[in-house]
Image (cartoon, rainbow, N blue to C red; front, side, top):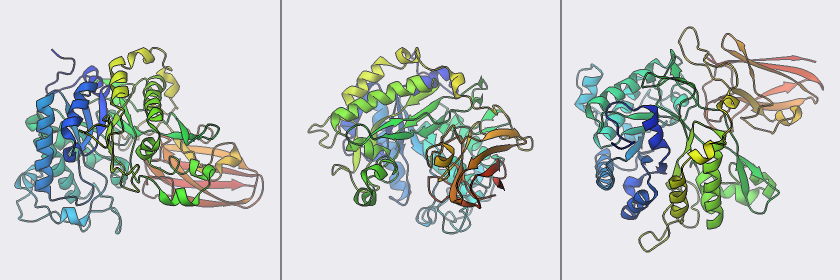
Length: 505
């Protein structure tokens, strides 16, 4: 029996079999080089294809989208039936999608509602007017998420990426609504999935209620620090937080769930940054004025191969529970295209794939070599503990984050790097009752901006007292220090997002 065999349940050893052979294959269902993509997948021994299907905004009618998704999944499974394909249900909803999609009868039945001949309703489905972030406490959005997930399962997909989950659960502080939806998706998979199981992850370090993780594993993009003393646009990776623990979906307590890293995409090449910022300024503008995959694609072939080798070894050594999803296919055209190509492709450049970036040999070598050789020298997992471990909110049972960081323009004046959401120097200390606090002395009067990052990442930040979480480095709040050498104390309550700032000069 293969190491990757599962049916209905998946012990951690089997889950790690797939995550240790993972690649991001974004929108491979639309690939114009699918035959060559499959050749690369088989050559490298890839067993998990992340982001293989999904929509962001009105790309095409759903009937066409799911038909194409099913056809490509079938072709990949014909080549290797063991492969797990992942689809995406993202943290964005648009009128064009909801109001053009008829609600199938089985959705009303699943939610115990009488059938209505109608489309999904857009009004009231978002957290705030003008936003594209859905509100999971709205029953319409719960139906929308379940509909999309069930449809992908019917197409042969056995994993779901649920996007930036801490954004659309902003009003769902006890996670009861998202817990309900994920439970319904898992029940549907037990009856309809290829192997009666669906893996669910999201951009999260932890989503635990009453000790049990709602996710099978956690996933995040990588984090960087720019390097200025080497020629070119070099950077190094930075360990950011960790994967939280809890009782897994298999009923086993895990000190830390598996964690999957990837090169993310969000805006391609930032033309404004390249045209208006100095070399030193651009070093700090995202990844040298690119998103992650566009930066990677902009390097020369030798540098790309070297950075894959570095990322693989870095993951093995710095996070004993971590794995890296190699970039098989990832968009480059959400901003300006890189190299004239709309997608990065791992494939060796050839007549069968004239737009390949030629990293398939390096990927095949690393996956064949495996993580074990480097795990033997890995830092112990205890180095990733930050205090406040396994602390739950007594009212809701929600697991509190182990790491919370105060970041912003004030950081250089307390010895940290400006806007470092992962800083150990401005890490807040857990002080009990769901509260985190940090005190420091600012030697200069003036106005400073700040945000608070949970788990030390930019995926779920807060800057306004009681405000919704947001994603990214912008939009911070401000505080004014009235005099030099002022003592500042910031206290943050996780469940309510209350922020208290005290000053003493």
